[in-house]
Length: 229
Ligand code: G3P
Ligand code: MG
Image (cartoon, rainbow, N blue to C red):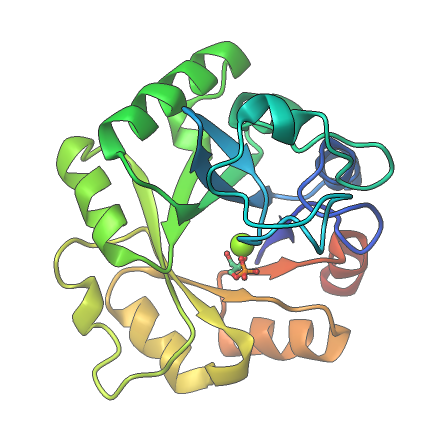
């Protein structure tokens, strides 16, 4: 079962910071997950729409300049990182899951993405792109069929794979609150991997492994590695 550090090792260091990603990589995770927003011509790594919870500033992120965002403290005197910096923390073979939280121009997004891959020398095979907004994923897939995509969902619909019919994603990533063994089985029968978020309790980790989950996202990667060893 693959272990992804959710927003980095975010139980130990400020979430979505280079410190959190470096800790996760040092622990030996299979992958890191982080939240991406397209802002001021860049892809910046931050979860919320507002600055309040994770930085020393307040207000909506949208409309702020990159220069302004980069001088903020995202915890432990860490900067809000940009995509290229986060990709650079992961050695070859360590997966990078870019979760798109906001995207307004898919062509510009791909330009920044390409530059970030080149700067970080990150192989496309080591990158997974996910989102709760499946329209953005479809737009990306139409422009770049080679991309590895994951559909995020927090519901177990009556026909749960209907939304995957437009293209076959690499994985369907399901919220822990709604998942059960049957959901995991259906996903796997469709040819996709089943990854579950966000899993911090060792009992859940063990149960999901028994149910056949292909991976988990956890804020506590060191605990997950120990529990599932
Ligand atoms: O990618 C899985 C998970 O990160 C989705 O929810 O809100 O933690 O970004 P959230
Ligand atoms: Mg996320």
